[in-house]
Picture 1 (cartoon, helix red, strand yellow):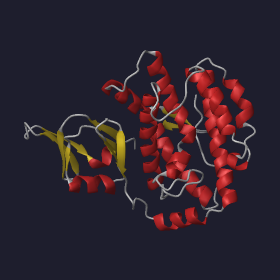
Picture 2 (cartoon, helix red, strand yellow; picture 1 turned 180 degrees about the horizontal axis):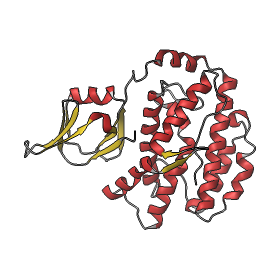
Picture 3 (cartoon, one colour; picture 1 turned 60 degrees about the vertical axis):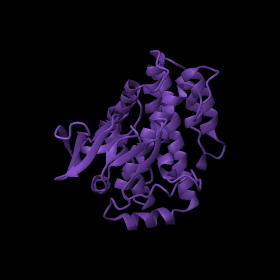
Picture 4 (tube, one colour; picture 1 turned 90 degrees about the horizontal axis):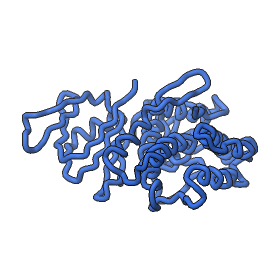
Length: 295
Protein backbone atom coordinates (compact mmCIF):
# COMPACT_ATOMS: atom_id res chain seq x y z
CA UNK A 1 0.00 0.00 0.00
CA UNK A 2 1.26 3.47 -0.88
CA UNK A 3 1.95 5.42 2.30
CA UNK A 4 1.38 9.10 3.04
CA UNK A 5 4.14 11.63 3.64
CA UNK A 6 3.36 14.28 6.25
CA UNK A 7 5.19 17.61 6.06
CA UNK A 8 4.69 19.59 9.29
CA UNK A 9 5.69 23.25 8.88
CA UNK A 10 3.68 24.95 11.66
CA UNK A 11 3.82 24.73 15.50
CA UNK A 12 1.43 21.82 15.99
CA UNK A 13 0.98 19.30 18.79
CA UNK A 14 1.27 15.68 17.67
CA UNK A 15 0.09 12.80 19.85
CA UNK A 16 -1.30 9.27 19.71
CA UNK A 17 -4.82 8.00 20.40
CA UNK A 18 -6.37 4.68 19.30
CA UNK A 19 -3.42 4.06 16.96
CA UNK A 20 -4.14 7.35 15.21
CA UNK A 21 -1.80 10.31 14.85
CA UNK A 22 -3.62 13.25 16.39
CA UNK A 23 -2.81 16.76 15.14
CA UNK A 24 -3.98 19.84 17.02
CA UNK A 25 -2.90 23.44 17.58
CA UNK A 26 -1.96 24.79 20.97
CA UNK A 27 -4.36 27.71 20.58
CA UNK A 28 -7.45 25.62 19.76
CA UNK A 29 -6.95 22.15 21.31
CA UNK A 30 -10.47 20.99 20.42
CA UNK A 31 -9.74 21.35 16.68
CA UNK A 32 -8.12 18.03 15.85
CA UNK A 33 -7.23 15.99 12.80
CA UNK A 34 -6.50 12.28 12.97
CA UNK A 35 -4.57 10.02 10.57
CA UNK A 36 -4.23 6.23 10.92
CA UNK A 37 -0.61 5.34 11.75
CA UNK A 38 -0.74 2.47 9.25
CA UNK A 39 -1.34 4.97 6.42
CA UNK A 40 1.87 6.93 7.10
CA UNK A 41 5.26 6.22 5.52
CA UNK A 42 7.25 9.39 6.23
CA UNK A 43 6.93 12.31 8.64
CA UNK A 44 8.99 15.47 8.16
CA UNK A 45 9.11 17.76 11.22
CA UNK A 46 10.30 21.18 10.08
CA UNK A 47 9.02 23.78 12.56
CA UNK A 48 11.12 24.23 15.71
CA UNK A 49 8.06 24.52 17.99
CA UNK A 50 6.42 21.23 17.07
CA UNK A 51 5.45 19.16 20.11
CA UNK A 52 5.41 15.35 19.75
CA UNK A 53 4.78 12.68 22.38
CA UNK A 54 6.94 9.63 23.09
CA UNK A 55 4.03 7.17 22.60
CA UNK A 56 3.53 8.60 19.12
CA UNK A 57 7.23 8.28 18.29
CA UNK A 58 7.12 4.65 19.43
CA UNK A 59 4.00 3.95 17.37
CA UNK A 60 5.59 5.51 14.29
CA UNK A 61 8.72 3.44 14.86
CA UNK A 62 6.70 0.23 15.35
CA UNK A 63 5.08 0.85 11.96
CA UNK A 64 8.44 1.49 10.25
CA UNK A 65 7.68 5.16 9.60
CA UNK A 66 10.72 7.30 8.75
CA UNK A 67 10.65 10.41 10.93
CA UNK A 68 12.87 13.22 9.62
CA UNK A 69 13.74 16.06 12.02
CA UNK A 70 14.84 19.41 10.58
CA UNK A 71 17.21 21.87 12.22
CA UNK A 72 16.92 25.63 12.62
CA UNK A 73 18.01 26.05 8.98
CA UNK A 74 14.94 24.00 7.93
CA UNK A 75 17.16 21.31 6.44
CA UNK A 76 16.91 17.64 7.52
CA UNK A 77 19.14 17.07 10.53
CA UNK A 78 18.25 13.66 11.99
CA UNK A 79 16.17 10.58 11.29
CA UNK A 80 14.30 8.06 13.45
CA UNK A 81 13.96 4.48 12.20
CA UNK A 82 12.80 1.19 13.67
CA UNK A 83 15.56 -1.23 14.72
CA UNK A 84 13.26 -4.27 14.74
CA UNK A 85 11.02 -4.02 11.67
CA UNK A 86 11.40 -7.50 10.16
CA UNK A 87 10.68 -10.92 11.64
CA UNK A 88 13.83 -12.49 10.12
CA UNK A 89 16.03 -9.50 10.81
CA UNK A 90 18.72 -11.41 12.72
CA UNK A 91 19.10 -13.92 9.90
CA UNK A 92 19.35 -11.19 7.27
CA UNK A 93 21.86 -9.25 9.38
CA UNK A 94 24.10 -12.32 9.33
CA UNK A 95 23.98 -12.48 5.53
CA UNK A 96 25.13 -8.85 5.47
CA UNK A 97 28.04 -9.40 7.84
CA UNK A 98 29.01 -12.62 6.03
CA UNK A 99 29.05 -11.01 2.57
CA UNK A 100 32.53 -11.31 1.08
CA UNK A 101 34.37 -8.65 -0.91
CA UNK A 102 33.85 -10.27 -4.36
CA UNK A 103 30.06 -10.26 -3.77
CA UNK A 104 30.09 -6.64 -2.59
CA UNK A 105 32.15 -5.59 -5.61
CA UNK A 106 29.80 -7.41 -7.99
CA UNK A 107 26.77 -5.74 -6.45
CA UNK A 108 28.47 -2.33 -6.55
CA UNK A 109 29.17 -2.88 -10.25
CA UNK A 110 25.44 -3.47 -10.81
CA UNK A 111 24.53 -0.35 -8.83
CA UNK A 112 26.86 1.87 -10.87
CA UNK A 113 25.61 0.36 -14.15
CA UNK A 114 22.02 1.13 -13.15
CA UNK A 115 22.92 4.65 -11.98
CA UNK A 116 24.72 5.66 -15.18
CA UNK A 117 22.01 4.02 -17.30
CA UNK A 118 19.36 6.14 -15.58
CA UNK A 119 21.51 9.25 -15.93
CA UNK A 120 21.78 8.52 -19.65
CA UNK A 121 18.03 7.95 -19.92
CA UNK A 122 17.29 11.24 -18.15
CA UNK A 123 19.60 13.23 -20.42
CA UNK A 124 17.94 11.70 -23.49
CA UNK A 125 14.52 12.45 -22.03
CA UNK A 126 15.53 16.11 -21.61
CA UNK A 127 16.82 16.30 -25.20
CA UNK A 128 20.46 16.26 -24.16
CA UNK A 129 23.42 14.03 -25.05
CA UNK A 130 22.58 10.97 -23.01
CA UNK A 131 24.06 8.52 -25.50
CA UNK A 132 27.53 9.77 -24.54
CA UNK A 133 27.15 7.81 -21.28
CA UNK A 134 26.43 4.46 -22.95
CA UNK A 135 30.11 3.59 -23.18
CA UNK A 136 30.39 4.09 -19.41
CA UNK A 137 27.49 1.96 -18.17
CA UNK A 138 28.29 -0.88 -20.56
CA UNK A 139 31.91 -1.20 -19.40
CA UNK A 140 31.79 -1.01 -15.60
CA UNK A 141 34.32 -3.32 -13.93
CA UNK A 142 33.86 -5.20 -10.68
CA UNK A 143 33.77 -2.68 -7.84
CA UNK A 144 33.94 0.09 -10.47
CA UNK A 145 37.70 -0.13 -10.11
CA UNK A 146 38.39 2.46 -12.82
CA UNK A 147 35.78 4.94 -11.49
CA UNK A 148 33.36 4.97 -14.41
CA UNK A 149 30.89 6.60 -12.04
CA UNK A 150 33.09 9.65 -11.54
CA UNK A 151 33.95 10.10 -15.21
CA UNK A 152 30.30 9.74 -16.25
CA UNK A 153 29.28 12.25 -13.56
CA UNK A 154 31.42 14.99 -15.12
CA UNK A 155 29.61 14.59 -18.43
CA UNK A 156 26.21 14.21 -16.78
CA UNK A 157 26.31 17.35 -14.62
CA UNK A 158 27.73 19.46 -17.43
CA UNK A 159 24.75 18.45 -19.58
CA UNK A 160 22.24 18.91 -16.76
CA UNK A 161 23.17 22.34 -15.43
CA UNK A 162 26.01 23.70 -17.55
CA UNK A 163 29.80 23.52 -17.56
CA UNK A 164 30.21 25.70 -14.46
CA UNK A 165 27.99 23.59 -12.20
CA UNK A 166 29.67 21.69 -9.34
CA UNK A 167 27.68 19.27 -7.20
CA UNK A 168 28.21 20.28 -3.59
CA UNK A 169 26.47 19.79 -0.26
CA UNK A 170 26.58 23.51 0.49
CA UNK A 171 26.81 25.02 -2.98
CA UNK A 172 24.53 27.47 -4.74
CA UNK A 173 21.22 26.53 -6.33
CA UNK A 174 20.32 23.98 -7.61
CA UNK A 175 22.51 22.25 -5.01
CA UNK A 176 20.07 23.21 -2.24
CA UNK A 177 17.17 21.52 -4.03
CA UNK A 178 19.23 18.47 -5.01
CA UNK A 179 20.46 17.97 -1.45
CA UNK A 180 16.97 18.27 -0.01
CA UNK A 181 15.64 15.75 -2.51
CA UNK A 182 18.51 13.35 -1.84
CA UNK A 183 17.82 13.55 1.91
CA UNK A 184 14.19 12.59 1.34
CA UNK A 185 15.28 9.75 -0.91
CA UNK A 186 17.88 8.55 1.61
CA UNK A 187 15.27 8.38 4.37
CA UNK A 188 12.86 6.44 2.15
CA UNK A 189 15.62 4.00 1.12
CA UNK A 190 16.65 3.46 4.76
CA UNK A 191 13.02 2.74 5.63
CA UNK A 192 12.73 0.23 2.76
CA UNK A 193 15.98 -1.47 3.84
CA UNK A 194 14.69 -1.88 7.39
CA UNK A 195 11.43 -3.26 6.02
CA UNK A 196 13.42 -5.91 4.13
CA UNK A 197 15.31 -6.87 7.27
CA UNK A 198 18.54 -5.13 6.25
CA UNK A 199 20.62 -2.94 8.54
CA UNK A 200 21.51 0.41 6.87
CA UNK A 201 24.80 0.65 8.79
CA UNK A 202 26.39 -2.25 6.86
CA UNK A 203 27.36 -0.74 3.50
CA UNK A 204 28.58 -2.36 0.31
CA UNK A 205 30.81 0.49 -0.86
CA UNK A 206 30.24 3.59 1.28
CA UNK A 207 32.20 3.39 4.52
CA UNK A 208 32.44 6.25 6.99
CA UNK A 209 32.63 5.99 10.77
CA UNK A 210 30.40 9.08 11.01
CA UNK A 211 27.76 7.75 8.59
CA UNK A 212 24.96 5.68 10.15
CA UNK A 213 23.35 4.74 6.83
CA UNK A 214 26.05 3.76 4.31
CA UNK A 215 23.89 0.99 2.80
CA UNK A 216 21.15 3.53 2.09
CA UNK A 217 23.75 5.68 0.34
CA UNK A 218 24.76 2.66 -1.75
CA UNK A 219 21.29 1.54 -2.77
CA UNK A 220 19.91 5.00 -3.53
CA UNK A 221 22.49 5.77 -6.24
CA UNK A 222 20.41 4.60 -9.28
CA UNK A 223 17.40 6.49 -7.87
CA UNK A 224 19.21 9.84 -7.73
CA UNK A 225 18.27 10.74 -11.35
CA UNK A 226 14.61 10.68 -10.28
CA UNK A 227 15.44 13.54 -7.90
CA UNK A 228 17.56 15.24 -10.57
CA UNK A 229 14.63 15.29 -12.97
CA UNK A 230 12.34 17.04 -10.48
CA UNK A 231 15.04 19.58 -9.66
CA UNK A 232 15.82 20.20 -13.33
CA UNK A 233 12.26 21.31 -14.04
CA UNK A 234 12.06 23.41 -10.88
CA UNK A 235 15.33 25.13 -11.77
CA UNK A 236 14.27 25.62 -15.39
CA UNK A 237 11.09 27.31 -14.12
CA UNK A 238 13.13 29.85 -12.20
CA UNK A 239 13.09 28.31 -8.72
CA UNK A 240 16.24 29.04 -6.71
CA UNK A 241 15.19 28.92 -3.05
CA UNK A 242 13.86 26.07 -0.90
CA UNK A 243 10.41 27.51 -0.37
CA UNK A 244 7.59 25.49 1.16
CA UNK A 245 6.14 24.96 -2.30
CA UNK A 246 9.47 23.73 -3.68
CA UNK A 247 9.80 21.28 -0.79
CA UNK A 248 6.25 20.08 -1.41
CA UNK A 249 7.07 19.63 -5.11
CA UNK A 250 10.15 17.59 -4.22
CA UNK A 251 8.05 15.30 -2.04
CA UNK A 252 6.25 14.22 -5.21
CA UNK A 253 9.36 12.06 -5.63
CA UNK A 254 7.67 9.29 -3.66
CA UNK A 255 4.83 9.07 -6.17
CA UNK A 256 6.60 9.22 -9.54
CA UNK A 257 6.44 6.07 -11.67
CA UNK A 258 9.28 3.58 -11.30
CA UNK A 259 9.32 1.23 -14.31
CA UNK A 260 10.63 -2.27 -13.71
CA UNK A 261 10.80 -5.08 -16.28
CA UNK A 262 7.24 -6.29 -15.77
CA UNK A 263 5.59 -3.80 -13.43
CA UNK A 264 5.32 -0.08 -12.80
CA UNK A 265 5.04 1.12 -9.22
CA UNK A 266 5.19 4.46 -7.38
CA UNK A 267 8.81 5.06 -6.48
CA UNK A 268 8.21 4.56 -2.76
CA UNK A 269 6.91 1.03 -3.41
CA UNK A 270 9.63 0.45 -6.00
CA UNK A 271 12.26 0.96 -3.31
CA UNK A 272 10.93 -2.11 -1.51
CA UNK A 273 11.26 -4.15 -4.71
CA UNK A 274 14.91 -3.13 -4.88
CA UNK A 275 15.69 -3.79 -1.22
CA UNK A 276 13.91 -7.16 -1.28
CA UNK A 277 16.03 -8.16 -4.29
CA UNK A 278 19.18 -7.12 -2.41
CA UNK A 279 18.20 -9.42 0.47
CA UNK A 280 17.95 -12.29 -2.02
CA UNK A 281 21.34 -11.41 -3.51
CA UNK A 282 23.00 -11.46 -0.11
CA UNK A 283 21.42 -14.81 0.73
CA UNK A 284 22.52 -16.33 -2.60
CA UNK A 285 19.02 -16.72 -4.07
CA UNK A 286 19.43 -14.04 -6.76
CA UNK A 287 22.45 -12.65 -8.56
CA UNK A 288 21.15 -9.21 -9.54
CA UNK A 289 19.67 -6.24 -7.70
CA UNK A 290 16.41 -5.12 -9.29
CA UNK A 291 16.30 -1.44 -10.25
CA UNK A 292 13.80 0.61 -12.26
CA UNK A 293 14.65 2.18 -15.60
CA UNK A 294 13.93 5.90 -15.78
CA UNK A 295 11.59 6.65 -18.69
